[in-house]
Image (cartoon, rainbow, N blue to C red; front, side):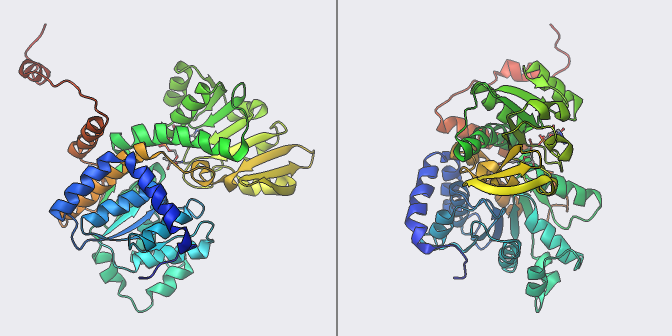
Length: 438
Ligand code: NAI
């Protein structure tokens, strides 16, 4: 079996951690049990480009139990857990191409490895597989990474593409990329926006990113949150979670937004809301979670306090303008494992965590398994849905079917031992008719 991981000797440690995560993933386990019974994904080749974590490992195992042939590469060069990658190869026979800290060339070599297996289904977190496949479809050699160009030699590119039944997308940023492809009429196959399922973003983006972002900041810095000014840029699903958890630890939270409705919500939730240029002067911690580019930039660095700490939890490392920060610094020094100290001309120091990449995955372990249980249950059910409905879907971005979303919620409640009420016949009638008044 081909693979590329850091060190197979790490496999036993990885296996223990994968099993630890499994304890908190009962919904995915139930789905895996059914997949195995029904051989739901027999012979389906799945290429997955996801953060290589213990939770992702459990998703790979559930798909494999259903009969799928899976191949995994990383969706971020710094988020791979090398022990997990090793365990998947050694103990579970799953080809993995991911090494923590891999450079850009290796990153794309790994993406190509998964694509070159002629997948039926592609599973993305940030749309890198799908955008690479679309570069291939449009013969966009200018933007195409060299590794992909080289790999394509001697391969029937049209056959590769026509083999793809559909894709799934895990995160907000990926869905934005896909919708823009769809809008331009260029999307080549159906993709399910897993991120948009309620049982994904309400829990994963909010509680998962909320907790793990704070976890990443704490592990990287060991600084006290209580009493600090904690600036959250972006009050979407992730931003709400980060703000909530920072406030819970005693921070004075400042929210910066561009959307008036979200800004108003932050005001009513009890946070200070102001333009970033004002927050920049007082913040101790800054977290970007917008999915946008150059949110924290030169004009903000210029007015920050000595010792300000910057972290990003948005998908790409573009939210903090690193080029500007580097240009303003007279020296840069790594002072702790995930902390780089930028000393500016006037002597002020700005600390950047995790090189501006997803702080929760770089400096901590990503989302806790209990929320990924739901996100990845949606992924698994969406893969099955794509396979069952192959040929019958249009090349567009689909939502997770409502019944799947509800099924995930019901299974999660059941696994938690929580029961809920059901509508009576009278209530069903009342809620579905217009005639009945008071
Ligand atoms: P969202 O769309 O719900 O929220 C983004 C918010 O940022 C919006 O309210 C928008 O108005 C605001 N915004 C955009 N540009 C801004 C600017 N220049 N200044 C201030 N606010 C701005 O998105 P969601 O789900 O919260 O995701 C945010 C990012 O986090 C995405 O890149 C997503 O892919 C990523 N993500 C990261 C995870 C992680 O593990 N760290 C997990 C899930 C999502």
